[in-house]
Image (cartoon, rainbow, N blue to C red):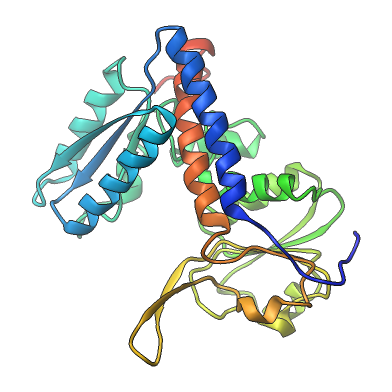
Length: 298
């Protein structure tokens, strides 16, 4: 591994732009074949936050030519109502991608609802079938955040092969999938979590450190091996002394300067790449439904 005298900051917006171009190209190719790429989004409840996300999603889909369709259930909808709608969308051939917006109302088992989505329409890659196939290196659609991390490494020309990689966090959409991706790429992987006894001893050995916990300020300069690659997946909102709010990661970004070899900022790092990957996954989902023999039955 080549260490750098000055920290290289990853431009997630530029990577996201490239991936969005790939999504747009695929959408156009499918359109020429008579296939309309759609993203059918389910929101439970009428919260203003949910509607704000919906507006943002609609615009992003429009940017790459994906048809966005919103399905809103009342705030008092129960799990049977959600399952019924998902089954309808699963069976509708005009629907090529399904996304269930979180959070759901209290008392609803969100993972169980996500598991109902057809693995071929599961644009977030959260169905157990996709997670299971990732273990063997061939998911139909992989978890978007984990894919985003690998895209960043690829764009930065960083090969995980032979590196000591430490993943802090074992969540189902980031930590665990990233660990599997890195194992497939022949990195030596350590996964740290809440029960890890001495986090410092592990992170100081990392050539590649991926942090996905959701705890601002968790990783500081003393945690970093000089020259390491640091990928910050965390997205947290903190309140400053003056009352203003700021978006930060799990890593103390300022501490990384001149210590880490490569670092992703928050915002502007993993986040926009994840969004772009979701759009590309929606296009890939449509392509696979039409061109790839089904490996599993939904």
